[in-house]
Length: 204
Image 1 (cartoon, rainbow, N blue to C red):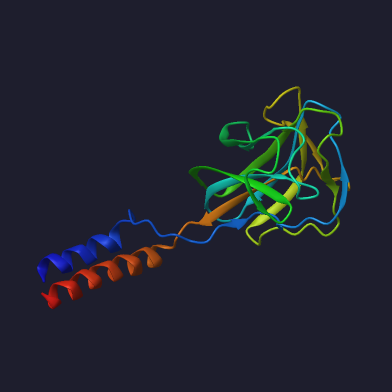
Image 2 (cartoon, rainbow, N blue to C red):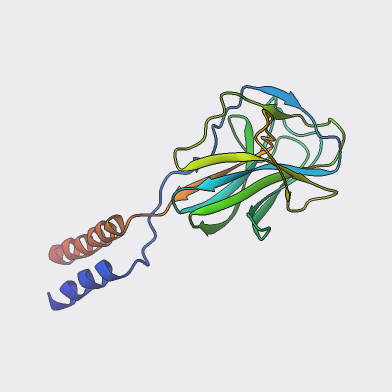
């Protein structure tokens, strides 16, 4: 029993336990707004503020008709100062995980603390794959505050030019995240493991 007691104390003090939560998106999966296209070879995206810490799980690119892409797209997430935190590639065609208006690619999980971020996707051709550039009913997750649109070019790069909120949006991309578990959730998950082990021992 002493070892069980010690394990419970350790669980309360530490947080190494992996707890899985369902993935959420930072903006509504389905976008119903006007569509436009890039003028060629630009990284277009938007800036947002995270009100709670999360884990990045996947990155997505807007697929207007949900029928695949005519050109390949790189998509990335940066800090507000331009440090790349994660990126992925969506090839030509209908690959990737389609959820609503976006096709996603899994990326290595990265912790995202409270703060400002920029997400964007690279568009190579001129008006090849449309994206949503105006949406008066844009819905974000409650932990996300939309700040405005960003762009830069040529090529795939940090879209450093902040254009603000002037009625237009560059909704080219989205991301999915899992919530960072509260310490109490970690302890409960650990206790569940302990009790499961104890129960197994009693059976033998």
